[in-house]
Image (tube, rainbow, N blue to C red; front, side, top):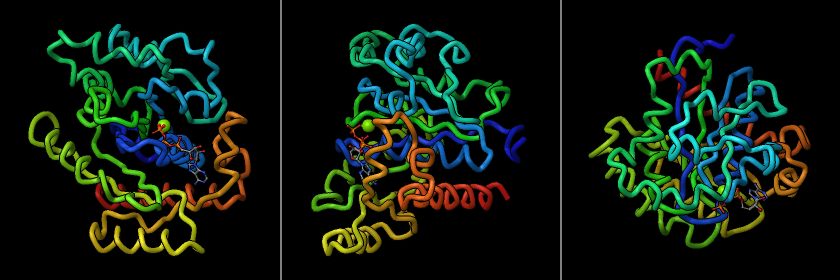
Length: 268
Ligand SMILES: Nc1ncnc2c1ncn2[C@@H]1O[C@H](COP(=O)(O)OP(=O)(O)OP(=O)(O)O)[C@@H](O)[C@H]1O
Ligand SMILES: [Mg+2]
């Protein structure tokens, strides 16, 4: 049993409207790293691409009940949670069905609260999760808004490349809007630099700019560009299982440590 088991889970939305910055990679591997620490983790795949589901080994034909059924069909949470092959790690998988959620929910007055209602239910601690990580699509659409309304915090992966900081202000604006309306407690969990290459001046410049502009919001942990990280999904495994000693695996373990130490301090 973990320290947190009697309290409701910490819900973290992993979001950036920019595509291909490492949202799904971070969702999968941070989840695996937290689970490796003995915590119980649920990944909610909120992207119609379903990459987090694939990366955690849930084949398309094994996705019987999905995030779409949770949001649009209003199936109860316990009907859509599936085990993965990894101890302590569960998932609500997604399929391409989810791409019509915006339209299907247009006349639903609670449409921005649907994920909130599912994940912040009063008896949530009975599920025994310590963390819920929501893998958002590359857009600031209704799905991402649902994630921000449901979450305690937003974790932003930022790719270490030119233009990385562009678009961040738009994301921050969305966070502010959600805070002013539906979810006043929403925090920024932090910004994590992904695909970082120490030998590359540009990577180091992006880090410097990010730390100058965003200060403590930027995690100390840098996620290196590491080929083992990019290979792991084709084996339907987190890099922590695919190559446990790789730099990518170690980096995600360090990120999990950084996040849990912060949460322990906040809870104290
Ligand atoms: N640290 C890393 N080292 C090497 N490759 C990486 C790393 N992180 C991510 N990648 C690769 O970069 C690509 C994009 O990553 P990922 O799918 O996690 O981004 P995303 O933000 O979820 O994308 P989308 O916006 O399409 O959902 C993938 O091919 C992934 O394997
Ligand atoms: Mg993704």
